[in-house]
Length: 154
Image 1 (cartoon, rainbow, N blue to C red):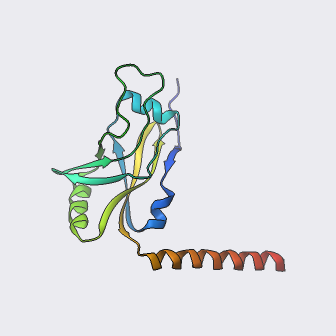
Image 2: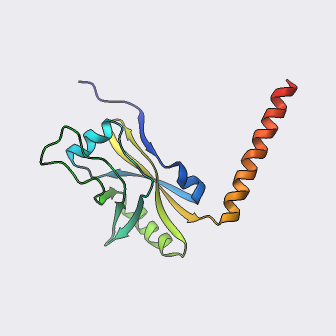
Image 3: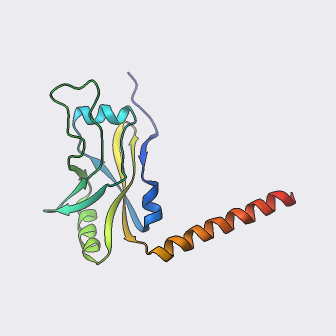
């Protein structure tokens, strides 16, 4: 059987871009069990309440919901278990320093397969204030109005 090629998106956290200022992004591998991989291949996952944290020099993905595999047996995984992320030591050291700064957190942006390997895009982010969110919405609507006006002129 030929191996998968390219990138296949499984889940995306759209709310994260609205709730946080994204400072930096990292791509990390995931340590998964067999039933988790099968569930992800079926396209089932949710990143809504997910976050990552550094514990004992390792990065862990918490609160990400990968539902139990429907054809699994007693070996099935629990849906919200902590999952270890695979990053280079230098990246982990950098993340430890940055997350100790106040107001910074690690948020998963997307979950996908790259050439058959499960990856997560992790963002180092700062929380937005309410007026920042309103400002972003106003900018988006202004850009849409400009696009509409340009289309009418053509």
